[in-house]
Amino acid sequence: MEKRNIFGERVYQLRKQAQLSQKQLGEVLGLSNKAICTMEGGSRGTTIEKLVLLAEYFHVSTDYLLGITDDPTWRGAPLEEHTDG
Image (cartoon, rainbow, N blue to C red; front, side, top):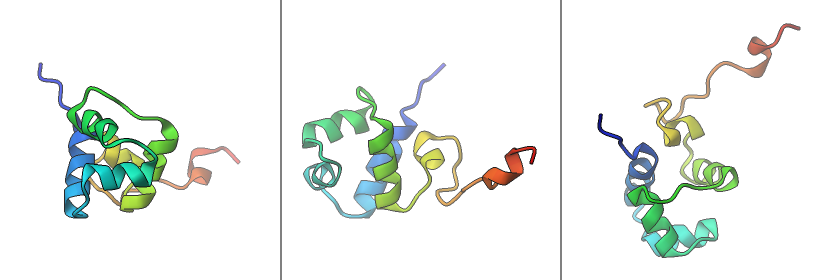
């Protein structure tokens, strides 16, 4: 079974669409360009805080970045729909 690096692929695609270098994206996140390179290549993950920063910067959902959905704007059901009262 092939293991895909969906997170890294999506970060790469979004970075390229925004016409950013790895260094420029690293500056936004407070990371080195090497860290961005390894993140996109799949040999490094990220923290929740950096994941949220990426989502906010690119205006996509964290679920999209993580490969849970293919819709970058998907937000899911509001929290009150998941509670009993």
